[in-house]
Image (cartoon, rainbow, N blue to C red; front, side):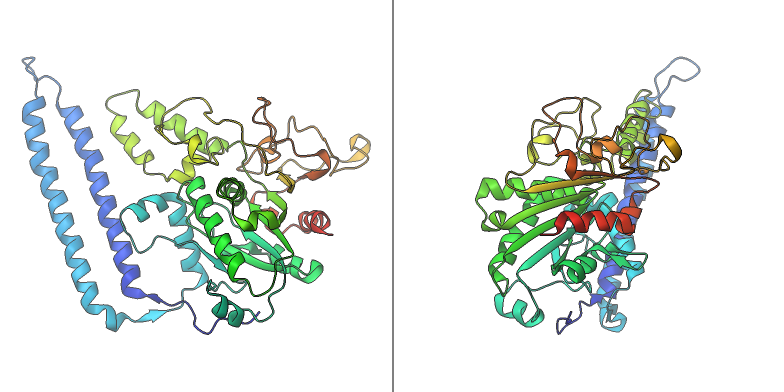
Amino acid sequence: MKKPADDVRRSHAEDLRGASKLVVDATKKVTEVVESMHRTIGSGPDVLGRPLEGPVGLVTRLVYGSIRGVTHLVGVGIDVALAQLAPLLGESVPGPERAALLAALNGVVGDYLVATGNPLATEMCMCSGDGQPLPLDPGALAQALPEAGGKLVVLLHGSSMYDRQWTRGGHDHGAALARDLGFFPLYLRYNSGLHVSTNGRAFAALMERLARAWPVPITELVFVGHSMGGLVARSACHVAETEGHAWRGKLTKLAFLGTPHHGAPLERGGNMVDLLLGVSRYSAPLSRLGRLRSAGVTDLRFGNVVDAHWEGRDRFAHGRDPRGDLALPEGVACYAIAATTTPAPSGPSAPPAYPRRAGERTAGLRSDGLVPVDSALGRHARPTLALGFPEAHQWIAYGTGHLDLLERPDVYETLRAWLSP
């Protein structure tokens, strides 16, 4: 695949400014937590039984207020210095280590980076196989992709990841589908710290622009989503149906790899920690640190897909699954692959069609380390929430971790068979 004429270069000064801003913000947040704990612990009665809340509050405001003030001045000073040094610091094309670190940072606090205007926030874009963001102007896109075909597969990465991480262990599902089935692979890059529905809306709009600018008529469109990427794909389909996007009629197949359709225990555990920390007024300030995790992370508690799943609710509050019915997109063949770290059964007890038997029981199977098998297969005790994948469209990969779904040969062979004509 030909590279676009210009590499995407990043200003070293902007990266440093983003990092310093994050450190300053973190210092202020930790200061608030320490101040709150100090005030709570020190506000009890003195030896004569007199309340100390007033005097302690005055002292803590003076002490911690000065700390916040100095921290703010330091941040301003760094910004001024970096602005002057920017020409000397220069620019460069980011390497994979920096990109992976930035993706993880966005996954954890990406919504905060956007809200505070931090330059480290990832902007959504569609990328080619070499990681270059693609222009969505028809002329520029045709020039950048002279070999563009009409069969498209768009791959959506998971939480705290980025587009180049589809290549794992020397294998890339997108490149393999291009080689074996003639698909032209495109890779979405997005800020996984934002709400899934926010990314879904942006992805739907991006697909509409892409479809209009694509150099040749689109004859087939397929999505492959890993983990959170599958939720973003579902959300985008819902937006496209609501707003009448043209690309939605081109979508023929949608494959999910380890997608937490009904959430992941890790986030539910984090929510429980928040609840426990709030029980005591002494530990309650520490719960503020847990509330720094991103909207994208809290969406994974139950698998939120649309705005109605979270709007008007405290996303950190403990409670039951608030989601309503949201079926798989109509007219699209949908497939689900789940992974389990449980070893494959062997010997006389192994089922004849092991390990890919449709309708296989999932009781007793461990998760893939992050996503339970039933969640990945869209199964739910509440019939209104069960996604109802056809049994022939479900597959379980044994002895497989969450990220192993990106490189296992048997996973790819299953995917290839499903996406074949």
